[in-house]
Amino acid sequence: MTTNVLIAIDGSDQRHAVIDLAGRYLSPSRHALKVLLAVDPSFSLTSENDHIARADEVEYPAASEQQHAANRLIQSACDAFQAAGFQVQGALVQGEPADVIVNRAHALACDLIVMGHRHLSWFGKVVDPSVSARVLDAARCPVLIQTRSTADATAEK
Picture 1 (cartoon, rainbow, N blue to C red):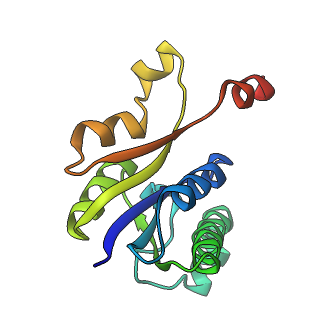
Picture 2 (cartoon, helix red, strand yellow; picture 1 turned 45 degrees about the vertical axis):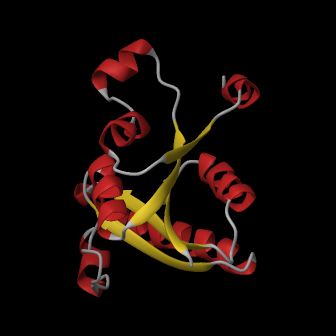
């Protein structure tokens, strides 16, 4: 029996570590993967099942490029999982990321969420709480979180 696992990625380089983490702990024979990238609707041209209209690409070139970049990220993650033998489906969903992740995991009857975590300053936590912290508070299933290593954080400074 396979179980559904939601893999939540974003546009950061940490998505590679999330994909690696999922590959280490999940098995193609036991897990069906649902790769999700949640985007703020103000940065997206389409709803989940629509195609980008040519007029939108001309009228909103920056949003169009963001949309295409998000689609490439989803496809790249799905390709990596398929190459490892997983059954995988990808989705780009508009909405506040924590809400989208929790609601999608519940709707798909996922047994696990795998995602990354940003290390924020105390001010950053006050101004914009991390998505992973909000998912941990609201999720109805276990959450496996990939944190950045201290070496990664130091290299960015």
